[in-house]
Length: 489
Image (tube, rainbow, N blue to C red; front, side):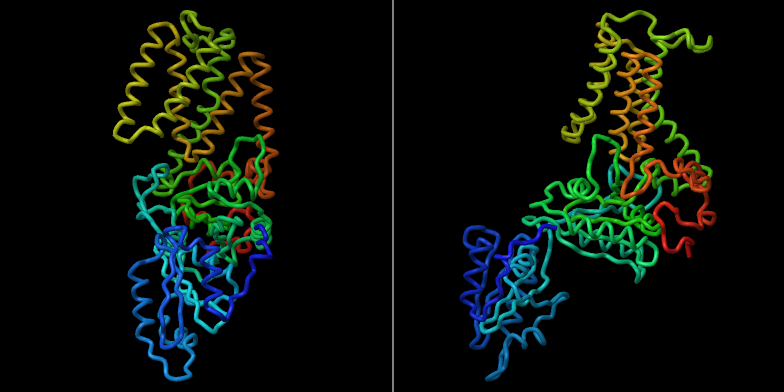
């Protein structure tokens, strides 16, 4: 975290005129419409209350003013101590000795009180952030299970986790990232389960971040925390489900919760963390295992099905007799490479259009794109039907991938394999697939092997990845996160 400018460490003055002038100038009171100040007399002592309109509870502000108006100090009685001891009846009451601390809290939605004659500021918690109710996330829906999900409020998200994990060893460490944005970031872990070395590593990296702000919240934080290379595969997992987040806490993972983001970052993660879905654990073990295998096959198909089809169209002699029907029956008017690339880019274009299209029109847009554009493209000879068929299978596999970030990475991997097949044939496919696997094997996230438990091999852990086992049989926490307490109890 960037070190603040030393010139901003201005102590609170005893003179209320000086304090009010400094805060008005630094917080933009009179220029910014949402930051204001109210000055009142408590007995014969002047008190100034600063507030931010959009972040405070108006009813709480009225309550503060009413409480101050009721104070009747005796001669010589200290108004500052009187407010703290008897009249500041709020959940969070603190004092601050520097102006910059007071302003940071003011712009976070707290009331800041200056009392004439005292070199401290009183801070009262009266926040009421703009927020929506917890709703089930669109990308992680389940048939059975909780319907609540994380919101953009860090306080709400912490409450959703606390509701499911009432353990006194759960730690939620608050820090601020960004010299200008001062974004709230919470480091969450269970003290006697999470690896202390991992927690300290993440804590030190958070403290070392120097940036002015995090407008893109958790994604910006990920790139600052872990770094980003040309490898498109996600190095952390995001979830909007509180039950999934708590499950990972119990396994020994660490969470990062960023204010204004509805997703929580799970650290560290491997490739196989991105292919699991909460629905598998809401069904019986046999059904869950079946769903997982179908999902894994869909993910593999999204990467390899279209490149293999292109390979067999170029080398039909490799096909056994019972698969001779594969491949276009008539050569198209457009080269096959251009057909496949046009279909790929068209699919991505339709996906982006659906995201930016209002919900009532998205379905109609999808029908027009799929029926009208696809049908006309085949009839005029721009595309062959087989290209659309296998691209549709690949797209279904992408949509079945639980992690949106992994699905995007798999799409790029598919394009990489397609280009290798077109230009270099069989050797190109073998070499491109080998390089892809090697890149994933050597990828690490916070010193965690990305392909664990396949490489390095861990038989029992790999079994739990491939087969959804019953809860009584999963008594050990995964060793990849080096938990202090390996047995679940």
